[in-house]
Image (cartoon, rainbow, N blue to C red; front, side, top):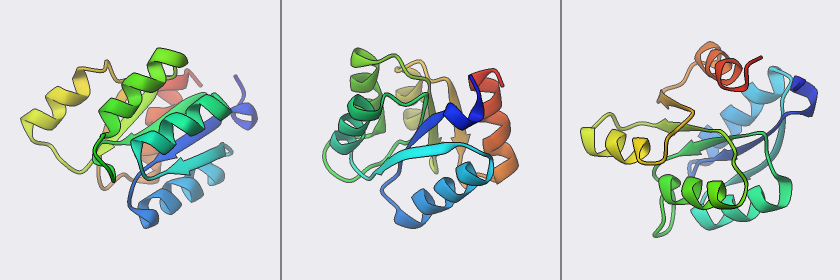
Length: 124
């Protein structure tokens, strides 16, 4: 898989964080195929674009969270998900691990941390 053909879906309900992740991904040579602030939109975009990777915030707008969205995405298209969260509490981390994440990053995420984790997950 080459970086140029790698479509990444960014899911975060904070617009500034989604924008920062998009810029960082573009600077790394990845294509962002969409951004979503809700679990429902994330699932819809994943079905449409079939991304190579999803960067998923845990807490999202609406009733469903990022773990719910990741599960639904996995049901239709097995896609690696790197969870991004600002919470290190045991309950959140436990909930993330219920979905067998490809990776977990804790906010604030530095570009070099993001790139290293993506490269590890995608085997680049």
